[in-house]
Length: 140
Image (cartoon, rainbow, N blue to C red; front, side, top):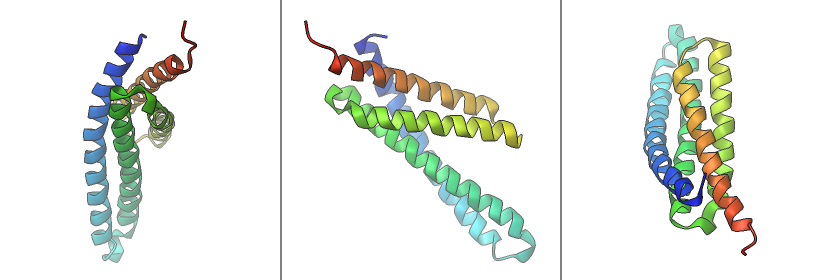
């Protein structure tokens, strides 16, 4: 993968990450609010707990995706700012892998979505790693 392709990948998937991160944060807040409302009814306590845990998880993954997107777009514009994008790409790969594994073990579906998320995170990491290596490469 060359440097220009890496920058394009970071920019495109960074913008997608920002959009999906914002949506994830919004859905996480909605799940937390819904879980809080359900928690007021004792007969819905188990469902409320699940909604709250899911909301927290969505909120965290939304924030990670948003930050990964922001730093990716920033690094696409200025290669010297690649380290935060590279770090969040690693966090994104780990987060996506955990989501995939928990989806498989829990049997709650979303396999295609989790595989897509992992593939995108790996692609962002590869692009960020290419840019990082080009900055550390000796000139000449």
